[in-house]
Length: 107
Image 1 (spheres, rainbow, N blue to C red):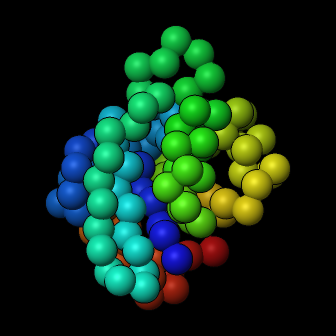
Image 2: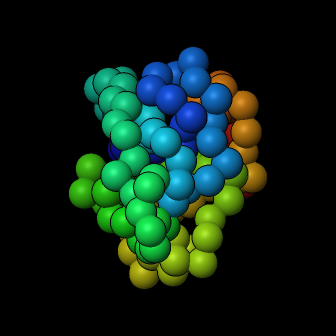
């Protein structure tokens, strides 16, 4: 499974970003291989539709779970229409947020 966290920078030491559509980066962990990938959010500077564009980028990467602080209405609509699961209300360092999720500390 691939899990993405919204991030202020690349890597697990970065702070999680509260926003999905306009976060600067996503950090993805593949739970099967334990590989970690960071990529710049292609929607961060979009003039409109950032939530939809960000969610599409995550879907294109095969992400099944996204962890963030909050979802805007367009990102929420994509969560409702796709198989991707969203976990909101999180904060802290990306690595810690991932660790907590993998240990089952989530709703």
